[in-house]
Image 1 (cartoon, one colour):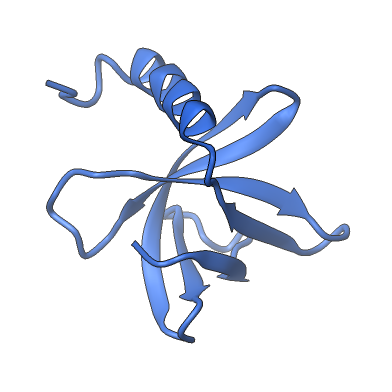
Image 2 (cartoon, one colour; image 1 turned 120 degrees about the horizontal axis):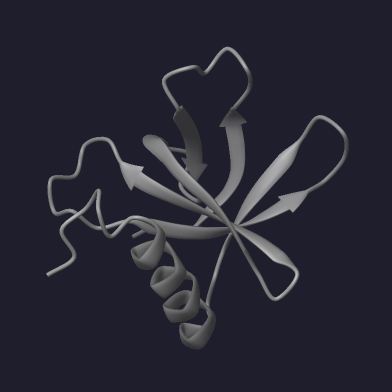
Length: 99
């Protein structure tokens, strides 16, 4: 999956939880925002690609740049990714089939 380095659209008008991110190649990709998880005093978003039926989620770190803008940063640390995913699985065990 490509690295996503900025949010193009997010806001209260996004009532259906769809966000559009711009990847490193300048392509717009749509995701469904599923959850915001706090881990080790950092915030992570869990996103589900809108055009992917593989059932995989994308976990990105949320970085606030100012009062109105945020960035999503790729997480390279495997231990952090696994810990955030385990929290997500526990919270959504009754909603998603993780088997």
